[in-house]
Amino acid sequence: MGYIREAQVQVGASATAANNLTLDTSANNGTGTIYFGNAGTSVQNVMSFSGGKAALSQPYIAPGNTSMVWVQLANPMGTTNTTVARFQTVVTNQGTDITYTDSATLGATFTINTSGTYGMSFTFIIAGGGQIGIYAGSQILTARGYTTAGTALHCNTTQYLTAGTVVTAQSGVSPGTPTGYHQFNIARIS
Amino acid sequence: MTIRLSSGLVQVGISTTPANNLVIDSSLGNGTAKIYMGNAGVPVTNVATIAATGQVTFTQPVINGASSYVWVNTANGYGSTNTQVRRFTTLGGSNGTDITYADSATLGATFTINSNGVYGISYTDNFNGSGATLEISLNSVAAIGTLAGMLAASSCVAANYTTTAGCTVYLTAGSVIRAMGTAPVGTGTGFVQFFITKVN
Image (cartoon, rainbow over all chains, first blue to last red; front, side):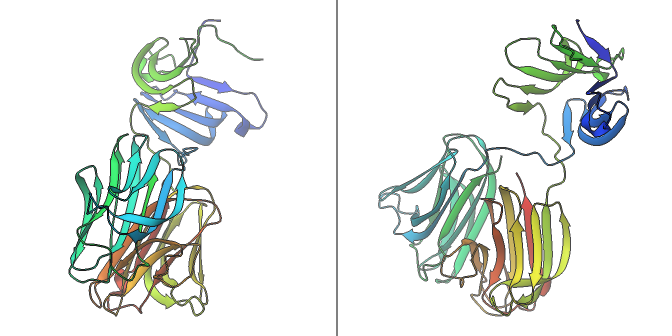
């Protein structure tokens, strides 16, 4: 057999309509739908098309997207990269999309291995007034500043990052006390 | 009966306008496939390609179905046992089954994760004390400032000034997220908001 050319193609012949999958372009207007049900009678919509754009009826599930690094408790900053924060405790380091490296000279780096969208969150107490920020390479992504020592500064952002990007958490002022507020996490979203 | 098409082409629709027809095309015979609007073998608009690995790449951004989320707002004190765990007056909205919100007079508000995934969390509060701090906590009711379970935190610059923190993290089923604070609500209780949304 060469082609099937019909406005509705039902895959399955179960007496239970919800067990059959139907592809349907019978509207004849450049749209199409894929649904469970018998041809012409949708029980559960799966996906619809309009031109080249697809719309899912349920949230898209990205299997295996578990990459996340979560570190806490500040160390002294890098000795060469003096604004790059370091951390003492790795709470979570999972997946392959982010490589966490700690260096006494360079500070903590989070290298992106897979292009995608990442969420990042940074909390820091500084020893005096100043700014903290999250960087991608030399580019600042987000920052927050305050005049008083001893209060928890926070910033967070969601960005598309390409493979090879090096993310750092930076502060213009050394970590201060109390120490129980230093935290950085980064997770791949999609 | 199983229909096996040697051409690798299924055209759904027989419109004389090719863009009205949908084609599933595996004619390359190399483990890949395409879905496009057009006639069999003649794409007009590509919808998606499927690699031999099974990975699907959509041509345009996919319009996603509604995600699971919970939105609560307006401060309602803290739990009487978990004295730093915020409670909220109003359920502003919710959807889906991936997050279970519960409010307890003793334990405070809890947001229990029902399915593994990436979640975006945002917490805004307003305290009556200068330097008071909020925290988004994972699986912990330990006092703020101990690092236990601290996903994000932020201090207010002065009494009655709003502060906020957020994070996007991978959470496993069974995880419990809490909004925590170190001081009573300030004059801006209307600013108190907590959102949690499953993003992937």
